Amino acid sequence: MLLEIVVLAAGQGTRMRSSLSKVLHPIGGRPMLQRVIDAAKTLDPSRIHVVTRPDAVQIRELINEPVSWVNQNEQLGTGHAVAQAMPGIAEGATVLVLFGDVPLVNPETIRRCAEVATQGQLCVVTARFSDPAELGRIVRGIDGNIERIVEFKDANPAERKIDEINSGIIAAPRQLMASFFATMTNHNAQNEYYMTDIVPHASAQGITVVGVRAGSEVEVAGVNNRAQLAEVERAWQQARAGELMLAGVTLADPARFDLRGNLTVGKDVFIDINCVLRGEVDLGDDVSIGPNVTITNSRIGSGVRVEPNTVIDGAVIEANCVIGPFARIRPGSQLAEGVHIGNFVETKKARLGKGTKANHLAYLGDTAVGAGCNIGAGTITCNYDGFAKHHTEIGNGVFVGSNATLVAPVELADDSFVAAGSTVTSKVEVGDLAVGRGKQRNIKGWTPPHRRAARQKE
Ligand code: UD1
Ligand code: MG
Image 1 (cartoon, helix red, strand yellow):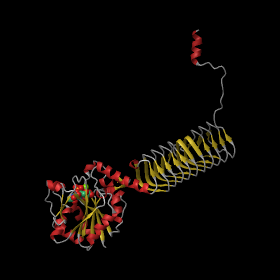
Image 2 (spheres, helix red, strand yellow; image 1 turned 60 degrees about the vertical axis):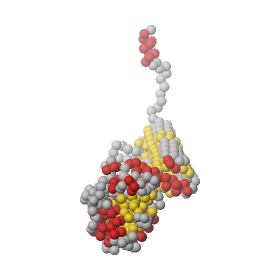
Image 3 (cartoon, protein in one colour; image 1 turned 90 degrees about the horizontal axis):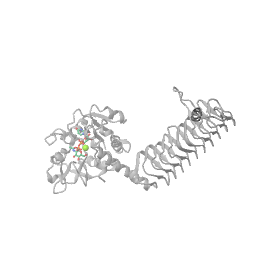
Image 4 (cartoon, helix red, strand yellow; image 1 turned 90 degrees about the vertical axis):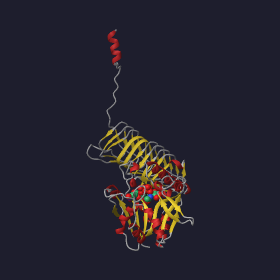
């Protein structure tokens, strides 16, 4: 079928009270409009047209898709918006209209809708809502057929009681749309050109109007304000939590689970409460994530334990590592099998070899550490001189005592030692001990000032 999809995204979105365009507000970490385009693409249309205001540069910059951008210079209603796309739509095409602010559209539902229209009919996706609020109502005749759609503002009290609503998703042959646009008017409560008026127009021409029922309220839920944004977000999260649990993940509380991207998981993964997973995250078998952990674009190997309040970003963590509590693993961190990173340890562009431990209070940046090392509490790689970043190279089996400052560029060769409190500025050779600190001297019989003052008074 020759299918063209029109996505409406030119509305003001004033009720969001935001400087960000409404359709760019994210659901599950992805802009709403992007989600709609993703769903549209599953139908393999010959073209996707996105209708925006001419000044919607933000949208065009952020949505990096080969769509055809259509300007709607004035926001005169949904019918007017779709009409702007018509010149770019091929003769004989089926046109499917989606809304940029209805982000969780189900590909299956819109496919069914488009298929009906390829048979020359008009198709409207409807849903029954427990609280239809101000949505357009579906008015059916005594034969059960859809007669018209009435906007809440135009509806009489009896019509307002109808609980079947218009999702806004509609499909029709191009020809039917074109003939409707040639005659549409704006004689209604909002003085807008309503796309929904195509229903009586089709009936008058003897064209059947078919309603396709959406599978759930949420797949056609529109977002007009932040409360609705939060509701749709929660619904999306609940759906993801549900899928993960069925895939064998234990979630301490599915209501306190937040995925803002894509998650792939192994077997017997445990995720505690209040974790936020962003971007592309992969958790291996038996991974256990403690409460209040944030993981962004990272791969976590099997058997890893992430303790509470840890932040991981852009890292590869191999099997059986123990990270946290309160650790910060920054981009470019690569932790080999069995590494232990403890509280208040920060790593950045750091490769740590098998079994290496940094258990307390350390900064390891721009560094490669070998296997089996012990990095003492308070160790700092001084990687920045105020101008450039420098590298610290640490071999295998190195012991760095507490509170060492390693002034990069510097190298600690295999099996070397650094005495606690040292400032290391030059290479430590294999097996050597570096002591880089003032020598302790003790002053015998020292009289502290208060005793001296007391003696003078006597
Ligand atoms: C619309 C429907 C209503 C339906 C509801 C579902 C009409 C007349 N009403 O109402 O029956 O129940 O959606 O959510 O169709 N837009 C433009 N240009 C315009 C006006 C709107 O691009 O001039 C876009 C908006 O960005 C949005 C969509 O069209 O993506 C819907 O517009 P909105 O103003 O939210 O319509 P509703 O009042 O929600
Ligand atoms: Mg709306």
